Length: 207
Image 1: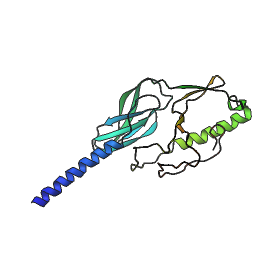
Image 2: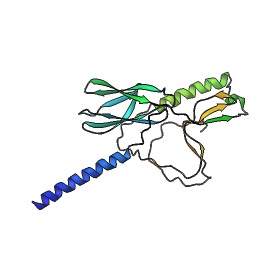
Image 3: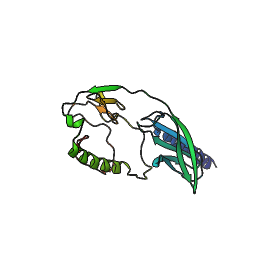
Protein backbone atom coordinates (compact mmCIF):
# COMPACT_ATOMS: atom_id res chain seq x y z
CA UNK A 1 0.00 0.00 0.00
CA UNK A 2 2.82 2.38 0.92
CA UNK A 3 4.50 1.65 -2.42
CA UNK A 4 1.29 2.52 -4.28
CA UNK A 5 0.95 5.80 -2.39
CA UNK A 6 4.62 6.63 -3.01
CA UNK A 7 4.20 5.82 -6.71
CA UNK A 8 1.11 8.03 -6.91
CA UNK A 9 2.84 10.95 -5.16
CA UNK A 10 5.87 10.59 -7.43
CA UNK A 11 3.62 10.67 -10.49
CA UNK A 12 1.88 13.83 -9.24
CA UNK A 13 5.27 15.41 -8.44
CA UNK A 14 6.68 14.66 -11.89
CA UNK A 15 3.50 15.90 -13.54
CA UNK A 16 3.80 19.15 -11.57
CA UNK A 17 7.43 19.56 -12.60
CA UNK A 18 6.45 18.95 -16.21
CA UNK A 19 3.81 21.67 -15.96
CA UNK A 20 6.31 24.09 -14.43
CA UNK A 21 8.93 23.25 -17.05
CA UNK A 22 6.39 23.71 -19.81
CA UNK A 23 5.36 27.10 -18.44
CA UNK A 24 8.98 28.21 -18.41
CA UNK A 25 9.34 27.25 -22.07
CA UNK A 26 6.84 29.89 -23.16
CA UNK A 27 8.33 33.12 -24.53
CA UNK A 28 7.77 36.46 -22.82
CA UNK A 29 4.48 37.92 -23.98
CA UNK A 30 4.63 41.41 -25.47
CA UNK A 31 1.62 42.30 -27.61
CA UNK A 32 3.32 44.98 -29.71
CA UNK A 33 4.47 45.02 -33.36
CA UNK A 34 7.46 42.68 -33.43
CA UNK A 35 6.41 41.01 -30.17
CA UNK A 36 4.67 37.79 -29.16
CA UNK A 37 1.05 37.20 -28.15
CA UNK A 38 0.03 34.12 -26.16
CA UNK A 39 -3.65 33.22 -26.44
CA UNK A 40 -5.27 30.60 -24.17
CA UNK A 41 -7.61 28.20 -25.96
CA UNK A 42 -9.98 25.94 -24.01
CA UNK A 43 -11.07 23.10 -26.30
CA UNK A 44 -10.90 19.31 -25.98
CA UNK A 45 -8.99 18.32 -29.13
CA UNK A 46 -5.83 20.00 -30.40
CA UNK A 47 -6.89 23.06 -32.42
CA UNK A 48 -5.39 24.68 -35.49
CA UNK A 49 -4.82 28.42 -35.19
CA UNK A 50 -4.28 31.04 -37.89
CA UNK A 51 -3.27 34.68 -37.77
CA UNK A 52 -4.16 36.41 -41.04
CA UNK A 53 -4.25 33.04 -42.82
CA UNK A 54 -0.83 32.03 -41.49
CA UNK A 55 -0.63 28.99 -39.24
CA UNK A 56 0.72 29.61 -35.75
CA UNK A 57 2.24 27.29 -33.15
CA UNK A 58 -0.14 25.67 -30.66
CA UNK A 59 1.24 23.97 -27.53
CA UNK A 60 -0.39 22.34 -24.54
CA UNK A 61 -2.73 19.48 -23.77
CA UNK A 62 -6.43 18.68 -23.49
CA UNK A 63 -8.51 21.79 -22.71
CA UNK A 64 -5.39 23.87 -21.99
CA UNK A 65 -3.81 25.03 -25.25
CA UNK A 66 -1.64 28.07 -25.96
CA UNK A 67 -1.37 29.74 -29.36
CA UNK A 68 2.03 31.43 -29.77
CA UNK A 69 1.67 34.32 -32.23
CA UNK A 70 4.66 36.10 -33.69
CA UNK A 71 3.39 39.62 -34.38
CA UNK A 72 4.83 41.23 -37.53
CA UNK A 73 6.60 44.57 -37.22
CA UNK A 74 4.10 45.82 -39.81
CA UNK A 75 1.09 44.98 -37.61
CA UNK A 76 -1.33 47.83 -36.91
CA UNK A 77 -2.22 48.92 -33.40
CA UNK A 78 -5.72 47.82 -32.38
CA UNK A 79 -7.92 44.73 -32.16
CA UNK A 80 -6.92 41.61 -34.09
CA UNK A 81 -8.41 38.14 -34.53
CA UNK A 82 -6.92 34.70 -34.06
CA UNK A 83 -8.87 32.11 -36.05
CA UNK A 84 -9.13 28.77 -34.23
CA UNK A 85 -10.45 25.58 -35.87
CA UNK A 86 -11.43 22.53 -33.84
CA UNK A 87 -13.49 19.56 -35.07
CA UNK A 88 -14.84 21.58 -37.99
CA UNK A 89 -15.86 24.52 -35.79
CA UNK A 90 -14.18 27.91 -36.24
CA UNK A 91 -13.93 30.45 -33.41
CA UNK A 92 -12.34 33.89 -33.34
CA UNK A 93 -10.28 34.99 -30.35
CA UNK A 94 -9.72 38.74 -30.15
CA UNK A 95 -6.64 40.41 -28.69
CA UNK A 96 -5.13 43.89 -28.65
CA UNK A 97 -1.85 45.01 -30.18
CA UNK A 98 -0.33 47.97 -28.37
CA UNK A 99 1.94 50.69 -29.76
CA UNK A 100 5.72 50.57 -29.42
CA UNK A 101 8.20 53.21 -30.55
CA UNK A 102 11.43 51.72 -31.88
CA UNK A 103 14.70 53.57 -32.31
CA UNK A 104 15.44 55.39 -35.58
CA UNK A 105 18.64 55.20 -37.61
CA UNK A 106 19.67 57.39 -40.55
CA UNK A 107 22.26 55.95 -42.93
CA UNK A 108 24.01 57.42 -45.94
CA UNK A 109 24.49 54.77 -48.63
CA UNK A 110 27.11 55.46 -51.30
CA UNK A 111 25.82 52.72 -53.61
CA UNK A 112 22.75 54.51 -54.99
CA UNK A 113 21.40 51.28 -56.50
CA UNK A 114 20.82 49.93 -52.99
CA UNK A 115 18.49 52.88 -52.41
CA UNK A 116 16.98 53.34 -55.87
CA UNK A 117 17.46 50.06 -57.81
CA UNK A 118 17.46 50.18 -61.61
CA UNK A 119 15.14 48.12 -63.82
CA UNK A 120 17.48 45.13 -63.95
CA UNK A 121 17.90 45.23 -60.18
CA UNK A 122 14.12 45.33 -59.70
CA UNK A 123 13.67 42.20 -61.83
CA UNK A 124 16.14 40.40 -59.59
CA UNK A 125 14.61 41.80 -56.40
CA UNK A 126 11.08 40.67 -57.35
CA UNK A 127 12.33 37.16 -58.17
CA UNK A 128 14.23 36.92 -54.89
CA UNK A 129 11.28 38.24 -52.90
CA UNK A 130 9.13 35.36 -54.16
CA UNK A 131 11.77 32.81 -53.14
CA UNK A 132 12.14 34.32 -49.67
CA UNK A 133 8.35 34.56 -49.17
CA UNK A 134 7.96 30.91 -50.13
CA UNK A 135 10.65 29.90 -47.64
CA UNK A 136 8.93 31.87 -44.88
CA UNK A 137 5.65 29.99 -45.43
CA UNK A 138 7.32 26.63 -44.73
CA UNK A 139 5.67 24.89 -41.78
CA UNK A 140 6.79 21.92 -39.70
CA UNK A 141 4.51 20.25 -37.13
CA UNK A 142 7.31 19.68 -34.65
CA UNK A 143 6.17 20.12 -31.06
CA UNK A 144 9.55 19.18 -29.57
CA UNK A 145 10.89 22.71 -29.90
CA UNK A 146 12.33 24.69 -27.01
CA UNK A 147 11.14 28.29 -26.81
CA UNK A 148 13.56 29.12 -24.01
CA UNK A 149 16.00 30.97 -26.26
CA UNK A 150 19.33 32.41 -25.13
CA UNK A 151 21.66 34.85 -26.87
CA UNK A 152 23.71 32.89 -29.45
CA UNK A 153 26.96 34.83 -28.96
CA UNK A 154 28.43 37.36 -26.56
CA UNK A 155 28.92 40.94 -27.68
CA UNK A 156 27.25 44.37 -27.90
CA UNK A 157 24.17 44.91 -30.04
CA UNK A 158 25.20 46.79 -33.17
CA UNK A 159 21.68 46.94 -34.64
CA UNK A 160 18.73 46.26 -32.33
CA UNK A 161 15.56 44.51 -33.44
CA UNK A 162 12.85 46.78 -34.84
CA UNK A 163 15.25 49.62 -35.68
CA UNK A 164 13.51 52.05 -38.06
CA UNK A 165 15.93 52.78 -40.87
CA UNK A 166 16.23 55.63 -43.35
CA UNK A 167 18.61 55.24 -46.31
CA UNK A 168 19.60 58.62 -47.73
CA UNK A 169 16.57 60.11 -45.94
CA UNK A 170 14.22 57.54 -47.52
CA UNK A 171 12.23 55.26 -45.21
CA UNK A 172 12.95 51.55 -45.48
CA UNK A 173 11.67 48.43 -43.73
CA UNK A 174 12.49 48.12 -40.02
CA UNK A 175 15.39 45.88 -39.04
CA UNK A 176 13.86 42.43 -38.45
CA UNK A 177 16.93 40.83 -36.88
CA UNK A 178 19.31 41.42 -34.00
CA UNK A 179 22.94 42.11 -34.90
CA UNK A 180 25.57 41.16 -32.31
CA UNK A 181 29.03 42.66 -32.83
CA UNK A 182 30.97 39.60 -31.72
CA UNK A 183 34.64 39.43 -32.75
CA UNK A 184 35.68 37.09 -35.56
CA UNK A 185 36.14 33.57 -34.27
CA UNK A 186 33.97 34.12 -31.18
CA UNK A 187 32.28 30.90 -30.03
CA UNK A 188 28.61 30.26 -30.74
CA UNK A 189 27.12 29.40 -27.37
CA UNK A 190 23.57 28.52 -28.42
CA UNK A 191 23.66 26.15 -31.39
CA UNK A 192 20.40 24.37 -32.21
CA UNK A 193 19.28 21.69 -34.63
CA UNK A 194 17.40 22.80 -37.69
CA UNK A 195 16.72 22.23 -41.37
CA UNK A 196 18.04 24.56 -44.07
CA UNK A 197 15.21 25.22 -46.52
CA UNK A 198 16.73 28.00 -48.63
CA UNK A 199 20.13 29.50 -49.44
CA UNK A 200 21.33 32.10 -51.90
CA UNK A 201 23.03 35.40 -52.56
CA UNK A 202 20.43 38.16 -52.50
CA UNK A 203 20.46 41.77 -53.65
CA UNK A 204 19.62 43.28 -50.26
CA UNK A 205 20.35 40.46 -47.80
CA UNK A 206 23.60 39.14 -49.27
CA UNK A 207 24.46 35.54 -48.39
